[in-house]
Amino acid sequence: MAQQAKNILNASKEEVETMVANNAFMLEEMKEKSKTEGRVEKEIEVVVRALEVGLDIETIAKIAKLPVSKVEEIRKKYMQ
Image 1 (cartoon, rainbow, N blue to C red):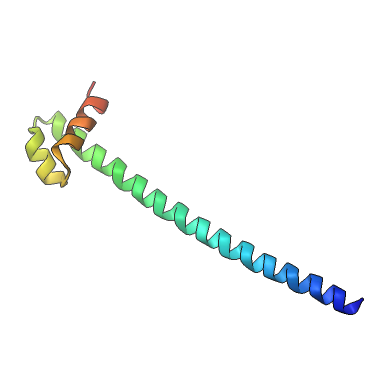
Image 2: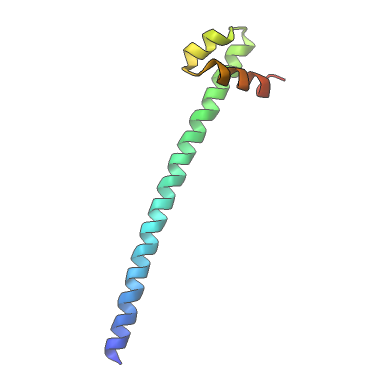
C-alpha cells in the first residue's frame, strides 16, 4: 500500500513537472506572438503616416524595409 502511494505521488509529480514545462513553453510562444504583432502594428502605423504625408510607395517600401506589394496592401486596407 505504501509503495502504491509513492508510485501515485511520483506519477503526479512527473505530470506536474510536464504541465509546468508545457505552460512555460506556451507562455514563451504567447510572448513571441505578442512581440511579432507589436512589430506588425508599428509597421502599419509607419506606412500609414508616410502615405498621409504624401511619400511615394517605393520610398516608403525602402524606408520600412518592406516589399512594395506589402505597402500597397497596407495602403488599400488602411487608407480607404
